Image (cartoon, rainbow, N blue to C red; front, top):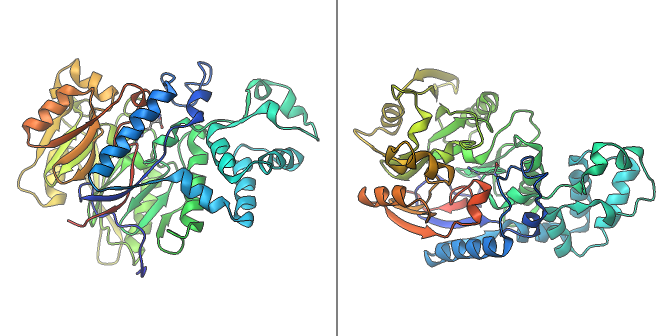
Length: 411
Ligand SMILES: NC(=[NH2+])NCCC[C@H](N)C(=O)O
């Protein structure tokens, strides 16, 4: 056991006490029509309003007594140590495949910046013309790479703090992210978890990013103190889940012994399990019906640990029945996104109508634009705190995606 744990996340619904955020910054203005798709955006948000909306999101959380901490601040703290900074810069530049003299030239530029500006630049990306190359390299001046105005791309998805890592129990998975556009984000998580005094030595690292199997936090849901639901999705592979399950079932600090692996369609609109399914109360979930076939069936596997920590696997095809089984409930309430209407449901799912951040049992924070799903949740007794969503939603992520719970009260 860790003596003084920094993380306590034993559910999706326990009263939220501390959450990790990232305020959208200059990286948003470094999206262009040419790079949008590669950077996983469907449009270019208006930064000023995106920041206002994000600040409002943080205020709603603070008004509920939630401590909001910012990953960019933690990174700045960590990089104020010269040795850590040097190691970080080497790793960060290597992420973009620069080596040798080219790497030294880029690092020399980054080292001219104050720690604060360095962090802003890591998120915003590094423009090609800004670096003074003392050792020109053909690769950097010829071919398609040279046409990219950025040596190092911006990280516009960073405000979706849910994905680079996932906190569960007393620990964290530091994820190898599916697309290159997001991979450096989990390098930041790794450095914060390893070197920040708030976390160093006080967290269990369940899995690290030195893996070739993709996994993202949007797929990792903590149903209770021993049960997870994980999406098998565009972003999370069955191999990564298998590896995580093996670690959790054999690590003595982990109390997770049951994992529900849920296959979802592999596409951009439903990239993670939390875009189609969130837990909002002990026995209530929101779900987008489009993840089921015409007969309401799905491909689900329950993985359990036997006495020796060996994995026992069983197949199921009904989401509701599987949830009742693993959560030991006689009944539960699945609230359909957009009321299941053939137009409203996909429209609201597209704008993250299924993606609720639960801040206490039966109370969520969600985008205001999904009014049909909101009304339905209210009719089912859920307390809904609405947040503004004109600009933030253009990145295809909602309240759950934009938040990484660090501490929840146990339920
Ligand atoms: N947990 C989530 N559903 N995150 C949504 C992330 C959206 C982001 N544009 C991406 O494609 O990665």
